[in-house]
Image 1 (cartoon, rainbow, N blue to C red):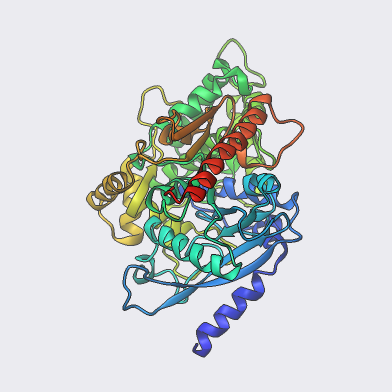
Image 2 (cartoon, one colour):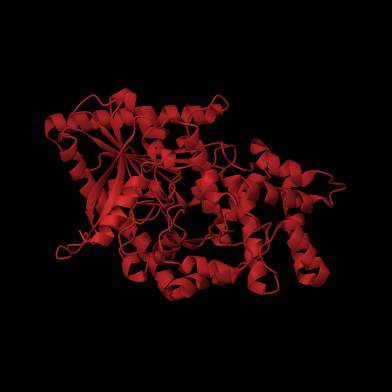
Length: 518
């Protein structure tokens, strides 16, 4: 290796020894405002980091695999280092199963093999637990940065090729025999990857547990806010029809003051902690999107440890002082929610500058403390869409930003046209089968309060496919460590996951003994 890449690799290896990837507070305290378009991801990362900080990480070991940068071109000899973590605390030996936790659009730390489904289920089967960080995220970023010439090697298909080569390399490294069944686990985008690994690599992956997995790509994700509205009105999670009306009233007041301009707009900027002047229409849309993300995040991560806000708390704040159904104080509840979220995320202000958003997303230098904003935007522009809109009349939020605003971001950052994005979304669904993937031995697990469940599989597809829809559960709630406060529905779901794996691993063992194919 040349001196530059060697030094880069050495620094990454040293950084990988940070306990639990450092702490969220140390990386984000007084951080600059993050793009509103990616604030939901920021909330999710915050939840995951705080969850990890309370779980065990001793006993996990990091390692590195040398992977081909372009696995689809055998004449291209370029490689990159991909990080993995191992927990062999419960491993019963060479013939025992391997539980592979797939990383998604963020960094993986030691907690990825010490908490969650793989670690909780490993003692039952004496399984080896391994996690694999997704290429271009965390510390698994190829030398050369995040320019377009490099990002062309970032896709779900490349990630699945990494799974295949990692499966073979790790088998050799740990002397795992062909009798061992490999089971993939993942949540959210990584949950879709787990399902697709079983679909595209059935000879290597025996089964998969796909939590909150959005297997249907969609350009216009209006359904997201439809679920948010329903959840805000649901007594199951502490919502009510009055809460939903209060949310609508609060946003209506924000819109009125934005349109009024002058002193009203300046006061709004100060009260909400907006970063910019709000003088441009695109900046006002940016602020509205950030506020929508905060409310959507309260639903998406409701009830989870580390979530800044849940539905019950948000509704309580919005309904304080409500009189005669007019909700005059709802706006002040929204202000409080914004303050709580910003404090939790370590941000001084709410993003309200479209120009700043574009500048941040155009930066091609990898950020060790970041969660891959540029990389994930690239994947949405070239594979998935997933752009949350509110153009339905029943949506409680303003209609801005509309779909064109999301699509224009792809053009402004990457030079990609709206037609190319639409084609990419269609191609993704054709390649993977969307919500009818035709897989066997994949368990899809979703919460019915999670806005993403509408893009997943919620009904069993026959005797070889299975689905769990957990009442009252939010995004990837089943993957969190067990807590005494967990509702019975969540406890039962985890037991169902164990029972389903018992059935499938029993089948795999019988087939292996009979010399059959999985």
